[in-house]
Length: 372
Ligand code: SAM
Ligand code: SF4
Ligand code: SF4
Image (cartoon, rainbow, N blue to C red; front, top):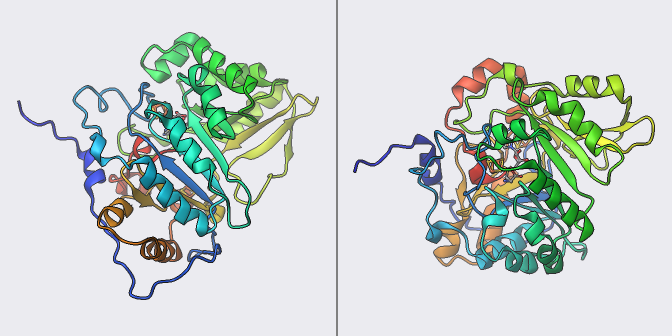
């Protein structure tokens, strides 16, 4: 048998092991990068595997039965994840989101949730601990996740129409099961629950208005995400992006909307509420209106590499430092140096030069690997 060559997987083995600075420092909880952006959010990918093959994320022809997912020994253990999380919290992180791949596929995830839920922020508050899921296992797991200390969930759902949804997830997964998962999550108190819909022009944009109508007057906050050029496998094209302004226009035709202010600086979604009091929606305009200026997010890959941008081509290997026996003070200092040196603003640059960037950056890391 010949080994299949999968260029995408090479990203995972790009080695960038940080050098330990000679002068160690203590955390102040007040890190800023070159653009003055604080470090507030940490997204942790707990697995690179998924039971869906969403066309915009893990297209079947690439992520097939021969695809080399990470071996178990590569994954950070729960103890390692918690250790890294604790260091980030000392640097000012207040919000942690578990993601993937599909995070609910990671065995005994409740145990990790319990470990993370015991951390407190610099000001002594509980962490905002949340998780993004495709909802397929949510009905089964919602109660145990809640009991373990998870605060809330975000659920991805790209269509209500069965045929369209199955074409998007590409594994024939039924809509009803995700809707059931949503209900159970709501019942056990994992709210406020956000529902994320990625809009891919020509595939599911006819679902914008039905989705809005379905979730209007419900406890769920629907958010529309512009289809992004993450990774190198989804064959992204600008003309498949439906701009958020168009989403708002289509919904507003039958259900008038009013813009409302952000909940906090750095919120990724722009908020709109229904004029008749039927709740709110959000639009995430990652392509047409970048929000790099407020981006306070760091990402930890399944195998412990730190990415300071969703579109970075390489990560900084914190696992190597941990497994080589470096101390908390050393790793804390490394993270401080990396964040202070951060210059990332990919989306902003893409807005300036869409053509140039999308063709030039073919080494971007996959979303299923570092987490959305
Ligand atoms: N499997 C989980 C899920 O789907 O919710 C968590 C991981 S998934 C990578 C996180 C989020 O990224 C999902 O809401 C997904 O829809 C979004 N996503 C993936 N690929 C995307 C793309 N090309 N453009 C925009 N959003 C994308
Ligand atoms: Fe899986 Fe989530 Fe990617 Fe869909 S978006 S393939 S559910 S990781
Ligand atoms: Fe943040 Fe990078 Fe996305 Fe800009 S492109 S918002 S810096 S993750």
